[in-house]
Amino acid sequence: MAKLKVAVLISARGSNMQSLVHACSAPGFPAEIVCVLSNNLEAAGLKFAAENAIPTRVIDHRDFENREAFDAKLTEFLASIDVDLICLAGFMRLLTPEFVNRWQDKILNIHPSLLPAFKGLHVHERAIESGARFTGCTVHFVRPEMDEGPIITQAVVPIHQTDTPEALAARILEQEHLIYPLALKLVAENRVKIHGAVVLIEAADEQHHALLNPKVEGF
Ligand code: GAR
Image (cartoon, rainbow, N blue to C red; front, side, top):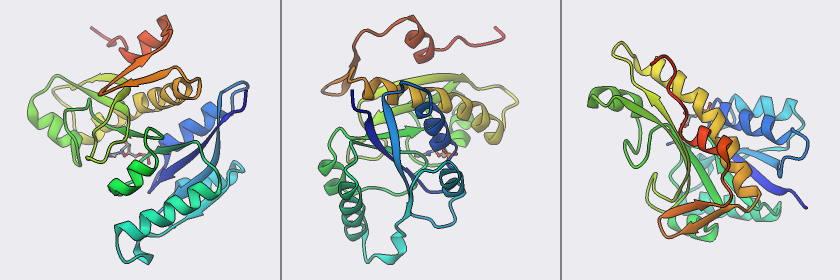
């Protein structure tokens, strides 16, 4: 079967993009990364992509008059390389409804909280300040409203009493690197079905259940 053609959009470090690249390099993985695109020429992840022989492209939002013009350029480029799926991986730009609707059910995003809690920015600080005992990360389909959309995978991470936002972010990031490749695999295998706000995963096995709800270590 033909592999799903994926573009990964980044703005900076790109560690989630790296986890997707590693996953796609495994024999038989059902998706391939055909481009890493950034709105920021300085994004560190671009170097990694280039070193791994993945085509890169920079489309700088500052070169455009408004969001609509920038997003139209993104669509023009992504359509020209015939992508099947767009993975946002630390892409720190809000997308217009026109863009999201053009790529309906073809955009995934990763967010470092257990959505629908803690949408937006500064999520780790806010999670700690809230007094919550657990937070985590989420991969979901993108909808026009920020950090909204049907959830595919999540991982739970405990908040320690001594946590700093940085320490918590680092533990969540480890889980992000597990759940994004899993979500991509499930989508590429065509096992992810959207029913309104809810995603059903066909033939989810034990391993997937373990990753969707990982055991908390040390308790
Ligand atoms: C990740 O933690 C990702 O979940 C977050 O930015 C970081 C990017 O790291 N994304 C968001 O906050 C989007 N709302 P990375 O560049 O190393 O993948």
